[in-house]
Amino acid sequence: MATLLAGSMGFAAGVSADAPGSGSSRAFEFKYAVRSKELPKDAGRVRLWIPVPTSDTQQDISDLNIKSPVHYEMHEDAEYHDHYAYLEVDPRKQPGPIEIEMTFKAVRRENRVSLRNAADHPVAVARPADLTRSLAPDRLVPLDGLIARLAGEQTKGLDGPLDKARAIYDYVLSIMRYDKTGEGWGRGDAIYACNVKRGNCTDFHALVIGMMRAMGIPARFEIGFPLPRDRKSGEISGYHCWAQFWIDGLGWVPIDASEGWKDPARREYFFGSHDANRVLFTRGRDIRLDPAQQGDPLNYFVYPYAELDGKPWTGMQSSFSFTDLEPSGASAVAF
Image 1 (cartoon, rainbow, N blue to C red):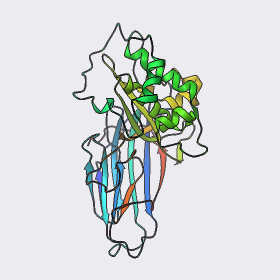
Image 2: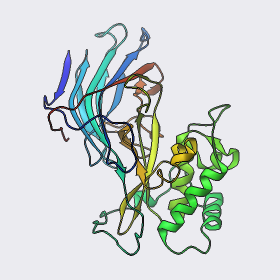
Image 3: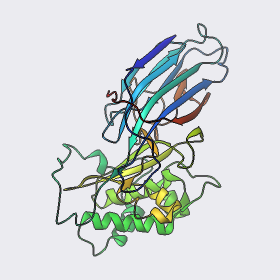
Image 4: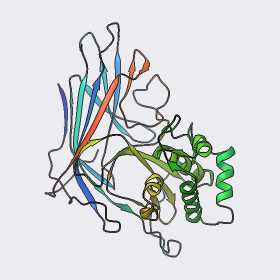
């Protein structure tokens, strides 16, 4: 059995529910379980990629442990620097379902950027060397045609990028509704969002990011899992995604349009803030893995991706759960 144990360090920060402006944080243990269906008897090779969270300025990841019946390697994609475990399975040597479990501890901090008087009081934030990808289209997020026209209309007469970003946020919240019925939602298709005016967090942020990029505002996509505000443990039914946009003098500004729509009382808060009730796994869209997948680039990467004999395989099932932790002693693992 292959096992990765990334540190056995202490654990920092107190557990707290979101309290905007308090610099809140949340400490928790997370379990990510993967199980395959029965492998076809004539299968030759299964390849599997599982996203792995890492530490950054908003979260500390520690005690990372992956239990796997087969050998795996840790890899990083070149474009977004996402991390993941890569496995190859020979069904003749590993009969029956494959079961993999990843656990880790995390401290997630509130990310809040002060936007008040930002133009008069810029902060010294180094501009990233290359913001090109954060200004480029994705396969489902074009920057011309309808998206460009809407972005131009909604920001007409506004000069500064921060004012334009706010106009785009307000527009998306005014026309969209959070609605996961019917078909087509959840792909992060900006044109779908424009036409149907509903969807989940992926659709909200596809439209936000597309309109911002069309106006020359760098914006990036982030995805992970939500932590319920009203529970200290339990199952997590699915992913959550959010975004950040770059403003010179401020840096990366957090934004969560779908949460702003669902919780009108925090609509102002989610333009410039992310609460602590989340954990980031990966960034970016149209992801090319290493070793390279034979299928198309991944639309986004938060669930396991598998290929069976060179073709995308939907035979992997996954589940997610968390437990809040009490404060204790201190430090995290960086990758």
